[in-house]
Length: 153
Image (cartoon, rainbow, N blue to C red; front, side, top):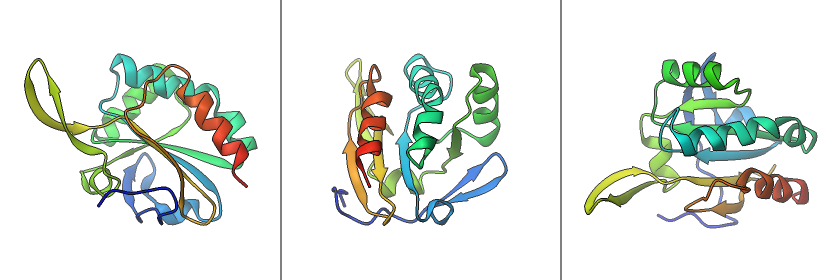
């Protein structure tokens, strides 16, 4: 199933640094849920650093930020410490990534493989998807998401 703007966001549970992170933890708030391929790679680092730099602005817009990959909680911790990330990173075993349609066929050097598509979902206070960005290009992305979060009641 492909998710669309207006659909209810799938409920989720992820492993986090202080225990489980669930969709219910964000009830009544806006949420930026972004999926990224791998901790500590150039594009993923740039994206996480950009969201961290704007974390105060997102908080002022009553919007939480949650990054998701299939890396472990330990890997997320090392990644966050190394790059001084203040955003929350959730570890997914695959169910959440699949529920949001972020687990896709990719190709590199003529080989096809399955992997996480860099994509972002803005979820409104009502738990519905307000905006979706697929095949994200990192430069300027966090700013665009912040503008959308500010515009969302």
